[in-house]
Image 1 (cartoon, rainbow, N blue to C red):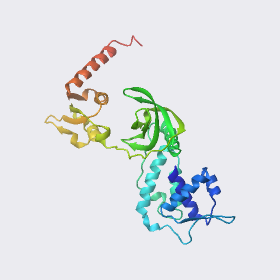
Image 2: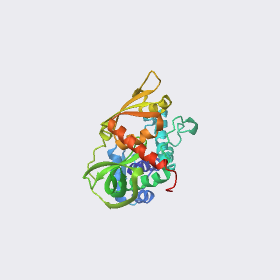
Image 3: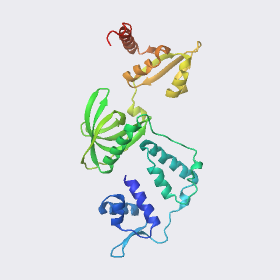
Length: 306
């Protein structure tokens, strides 16, 4: 990514007296034009980088300039490292941690024994997620369209998007981009994306930050009331918090919540088996009853159909 490259360039300039644009271009496997743009961006960020033309010329940081190490405390560095390690947990590499250790050479704040925050963003789908994330990042870095097959509750579609943000939210990975088919910005869950392909370049837009408020993405609308057995308390607390139910005189838990998706609601309730009774809405009660009748018909006739 561009930010990785710029940090890498800054690290080299802080360690070497002078380097050339061809040297940096070869090291980071980009064009000289890209390196020149990176140098301009470093200057805009307040880093006094100077370039000198000619046989003895090159790129360097003005003499006497030093990064003020007091800007980042030991606690700051530990938190940054914890975040970088969490990114490495997704890809299964040590790229981000190694980058941080290079920038902090000689510092004692990165001693392994001093870590007390560990964040692991990997999942059961790590083997399939890591290649997707790598491909999405490549498409974003080079402003290229990303096309894929997408599986949604309403069916399977083929989408092409301009990818802008890779997001970890609600315990899952998503990509936010401009969908050419819908002519609007959309959020796509990586686990539902298959057959990813990088296509031609696109002209980057002025992109707004994604609005990921729960009420924006999950508007609700299904008022749920259900009665759970006391043994379900730990799951309700874990998934909805301790304020989602009222304990009844007989120990059962009266649960109330605003739910978003009917299919997800039914699936969730069925995971509790006989330990829950849905009270409202009535129409979903009837749908669950019909489903249970259908299941009973299948499971109650033996295994002759197998």
